Length: 137
Length: 137
Image 1 (cartoon, chains in turn purple, blue):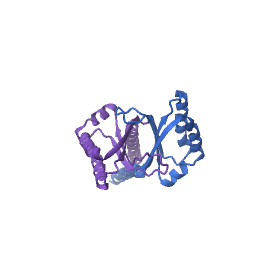
Image 2 (image 1 turned 180 degrees about the horizontal axis):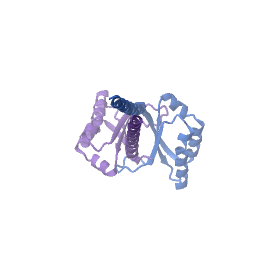
Image 3 (image 1 turned 45 degrees about the vertical axis):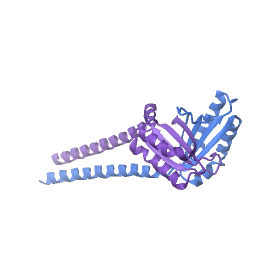
Image 4 (image 1 turned 90 degrees about the vertical axis):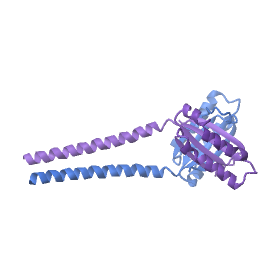
């Protein structure tokens, strides 16, 4: 009888620990999700000059892609080239989506030396830039 | 002696179960992450006519925001209004980021009756639309 009671006790303890552990992990992932819902999107779209060669454009791409490692306030970063079939791109080809956690972080990014250095790589080949920022809802 | 062995056995069984459970949850969240990495972004930006009233624009917003519930191929949806300090917005104010899992899903979205109905709400108030799609890298 005593034996059974002990075994049951250790079993329920273990089950309780398992439950608490899973509850903890689930609340952790919910907290992560919540934190990531507040996003300031900084959308940058480029149209390059006709004189820009493929290697010039590649240099610009690489310089932009290198920024997240140099500028810690960049929370998320993604990019791609236009493949819309709708013909509403106005000649723009390159889209970069940079995400910040706050307007202060964006204010730190714009004059950041690494960003300014990137702009100097971009400028000779840029025809037009289009920029829209928004708090994602 | 027998009692101890039994208790140890049930303890290790429980620990093993805990471990397997946590491993399972962790692999689940990794799988979710992996699945969500392949994203076809469909970026839609509007400039409204000067004649568009606040309530007209609100109707357009509400009609667009209602689409994800009507069109299942929309994988993610977010939107916001421009707050960029850079003055490179060319008069565009509203940005919608619609995400698909494939080009087939986008092809199903564009002629979808719910999307076409939204376009008919939008058209009378639209000055210009700018659309860029890209596979997010």
